[in-house]
Length: 205
Image 1 (cartoon, rainbow, N blue to C red):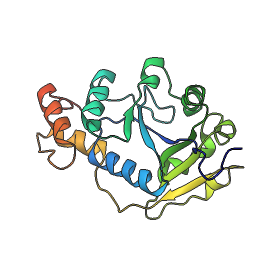
Image 2 (cartoon, rainbow, N blue to C red):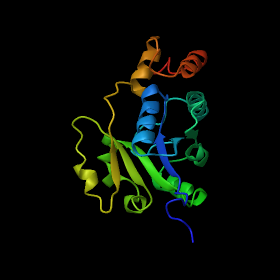
Image 3 (cartoon, one colour):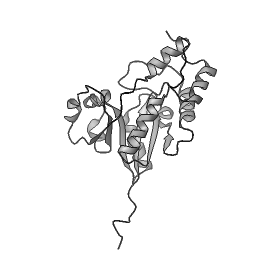
C-alpha cells in the first residue's frame, strides 16, 4: 500500500500568458511572487500571437519577443518559455493553450497567472466555463480592483497574489525606447542590450 504522506504530489505549474512586448522586470517579479505564494514548481511564460481582447497586434516580431524572453529567463531554474501560441498563430485563446498543456502534462495541477484588470473581464473570455474546470487563477492584486464580475463566474477557483505596486509597463518601456531614454532597472540587462542592438520600438508612432 502506498503511503499517502510520502506519495509524490502532482507538479504545480503556472502558465503566464501575455504579449511580453517587451518582457520587463515586473513580469519576472510577478512570477516570483506567484511561485512563492502558490507553492509552485515552475512558471511557464507563454507569449501570445494575438490577444482576442486587444485590438492591436504586438509591436515587435514574434522572433524578437521570444529572444527577449529567452534572455530574461536565462539562469532562472523554475521559469520556462513555451512558444506554442506563436507556433499555432492566429488569435491566442487561453482554453486552447490550457488544453495543450493538459495533454502534455496530464498529472500536473495547472494555474493561470492573471492581472486584476484581466480577471475582471473573465466573464468575456472564450469558453470560460470550460477553462475554469482546468485551472486555478492566480490573480495579481491591484489597488482599487473590483473582482466581483469575475467571481460571479460559476465554479471559479482563484488565489490572490499579494505584491507591491509595480510601475513598469511594456507600453511605457516602448515609449522610453522611442524617446531614446535609458531602460536600466526596467528590463533585465541582456534584454536592454538586445533592444538597443536591434533598435526595437524606436520608430513607433
